Structures are given as structure tokens and as C-alpha cells.
Length: 364
Image 1 (cartoon, rainbow, N blue to C red):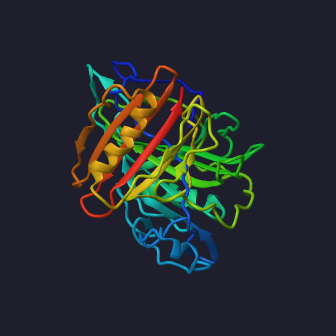
Image 2: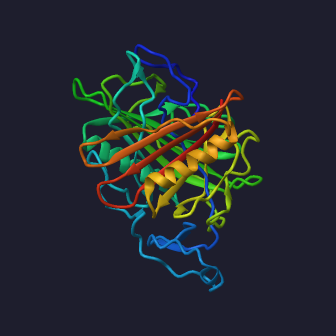
């Protein structure tokens, strides 16, 4: 989200150099064979094998209508426990799993330690019961959720209701703060439903981000009261998503011209359409990929793509690596140019399960 409220870092400034660490945002992707997942009574096309198979062969694409697929890795169905006592809410499907987030704060010349995470939920129906479910889960974990006043390029939310109908989108936002003394954790919630526009695919995603740092980025949006109305009924979402590109195909078209698209590397698979990144001054995107080969080699291959775009005469930055108590690892790197384009890579390798890569492309 691009936020109008004041935000700054603790004892430092944000760095956009190739060696700085910043979290990615929301992303948008494609693939060739549509696969249907059933969520309650609603058929929801997730654009990739929900069983993790990622049908990529010409035979699979030409075999006719897809059949319902069990919701397995890298998609998580309602009830699956995530982190910090939070589970996948009813009415939603988790796209991938929790993504570790790089630190966005420089403290005494070094990136502050960040133990937080974020996750995307695909929501084909009314998001309000899903947001209420998440709010109740957070309440049981000692958080108080309030609606937040935020503003994007062509949308806004208010403090009087969690959800707002804007001209081109339906948007919801809230911020939950821990009530216990000394607990610095903050949870940001945002939902966006947008129709397809130009080459951009439609969206219907809820993003939850939990920040957990001793030196957090200060973010003070205007907040409403707990228990505020959820807001108006949302418009329906399309019954299906566009197909996703497979190996060699392009993803990231339809955004700002300076937000250069990527091509799908071998042994990596887009797991949702790309998502518009509202953290950018101009429209950027985030792509979410599951990795089936050597994760560090695939990470480097995408980083090299960005380096060729920016400056093919020098090597890209070495990634930073962070280890977490649950056994997961985060690889993060940023490549930027003087024209304002910033390419951020954040790869989460869980102790068990599928490695996930977020590629965020912004034009600041």
C-alpha cells in the first residue's frame, strides 16, 4: 500500500542501494493451463496446479477442462495453522505459505532484525466474513484490530468502515496492535478487489503482514474504533483468472513501462496472477513463485535478469541471509537503477515444504 500517513525509520534512513534490504509487496503472475479449485460451493480458478503439480506440458494444456484439485502445497485450505497462532480463515485459500520479510529499517548502520512474515489469501466470495474471522483470531492472540485510513493511486479506505467501494476497486484495510506491554508486534491487513485492466489480471486478495522487530518502522495511520462496521457489500469477482505463463513466458506486463517484466525461469512456477504493488509511486507489481529445483540457483537466475535490465556490466549484490527459530531461511537482495526502478527479491525456504520466491518491482 502506498500510505499517506507519516512513516519513518528508527535511527536511520531507508536505503535503496543494491545492498539494502526491503520487503517486497504484492505481485501479479500468469500460467498456461488453468486448474480449478473448489472453495465451498464456489469454483475458483487458481491458475496453477493446486496440488503443487503445476501442469506445464502441452498435453496437459490441451486435455480439456481441468478437474477439481485437492488443496495441497503450495495452496493451504481453511484451518491450516500458519504462524503466531494464526490459521487460514474460512472462505479463503492461502497462496503459498508465510513469506518472511526483509527488514526495512536501518539501525546504527545495520538492518534491524525482523522476525515477521506476510501471506496472501485468495478470496472468491465476500471478504468481510474472512476479515472478521482474522480479526477474531488476532483478538484471541492479544491484538486489537481497527480500520485504517490509507490511500493508494486510485483508491482509499476510511476509519468509519473496514471496507470501501472505490471507483475502480473494492478495498479494505486495518491495523492490529498488541495490547500487552512491551509487545511490539503490529499486524497490517489489506484487501483489494480489482477487475482486469489492460494487460493486468483481476485481483481478489487479502494480504496480512505481521511486523515483529525491536526497532520497527514507525507507521502511524489514522485508525478507527474496534468493532466498526465492515462496510458495503463487495461486487462479485470473475469466475476465473487468466492463465499463467510457464517456463520462458513473460509476467509483469500492464504496469508502469519502467516496471520491466520478467520471464519464468526453469524449475519455478507462478502460483497466482501478479498483484499490483501499491507501495510504489507508479504502478508496480509483485510475483509469487514456487521453486522446485535448487532454490539458490533459481534465486540467482532471477536476480541476474534484473541485473541485465539495470546494468549488464557489473555483478549484482550478494543476498543477505536470515535464519529463524522455526527453521526457515530468508534470502533477500535488491537491484535498482538511477531511473527509479527497484527490483526486490525475497525467498523463503521453510524447514519443510516448498521454497517460495517473491519478486517485487517498483518505480519510485
